[in-house]
Length: 348
Image (cartoon, rainbow, N blue to C red; front, side, top):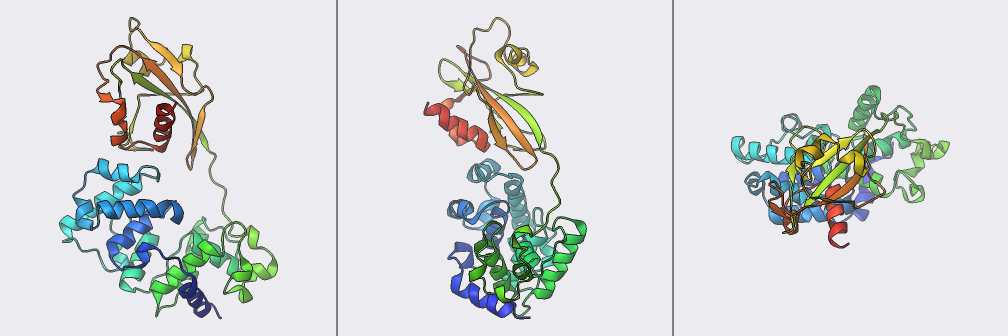
C-alpha cells in the first residue's frame, strides 16, 4: 500500500514552519501538544510564544504561581489543561530531577498526559514507534479506508488506534506522526478538503466512493445544558469592585469573576434583588443604582453547556468587600466571558 512514502515526502515539502518543530525538547513539545488540544494552531501559536518567553524551561514553569499560568492561558479555555501543566511541571522538577520520562508508558503516568500527548512526546522526542491518534488522524484514516465506525465509540477508539499503529512508519515515527496530522490539518480538512492536492488520493476509498463529507462518523453528543448567570458588578465611588475566586470543581476553577447569582431562568431587576446572593451582598438600607449592561443576554458557548449571561452594574458609595480597583482587574486571570465584558464596559 503506497501510503507512508508519499505522505512523508509531501510533509517534508509542505510542512508549516512552527516553533515546536525546530526542537526535540520534550518541554516545548509537551507544551505545544497540550495547548493545541481543543485549539487551532493559529489561535495557539501566540500563546505558545508568550508562554515560552515567560517560562523558557520546565524549571521556570515549575517555579511559577498558578495565577500567572492561568493569566497566560486566559482565552484558550479548558483551563484544567493549564492547571495540570503546572502540576506536572512541579512533579517532574521535584521528583524526576527535571527530566521527562522517555517512554510512552511512563509519560502516561503524568497528570494531564493522555495517550495522544504521550505518543506525540515519545515519538517526536525519543523516536519511540507509537502512533498518535488525534482528530486529524481519525479523519485521514476513516476517509482513506472509508470506515464509518464512529470514532468516539469504544469500538471505534480501539479500531482506529490499532489501525494507526499498523500504518505507522516505525523507522521514522517522529516524521510520520507529524505528517499525518499535518495532512489532516491542511488537506484532509473537516470541511472542503482539498482532495486534488492530497498525496495519497490515488488509494483513498472515501474519495472513490464519494463519501468524504460523511466521514468520520461521530455518535451525537449529549444535549447541551442551559445555565443562567447574573454577574453583580459592584462599583463604589472610588472605582473599587469585588472579585471572587471560583473554588468549586467545574468550569473556570481558580479563575476570578464578579459575584455570581445563578438562576434557573432569565432574571429581571425585581427578581434579581430577591436572589440569595444579591441579598447577602446588600441589605435593604443600601443606596444602590442598578442597571443592566446588556439587556439581551450574552450566550457563551462551552462544549456541553451554553451560559446565558447578564451583567448588572451596581453603583454604591462603598462596600466592605470592594477592595480591588476596577483598573486592576486585568492583573487577575478571568474567563473569556468576563474579559470580553471588561473590554466592552471600559470602552463604553
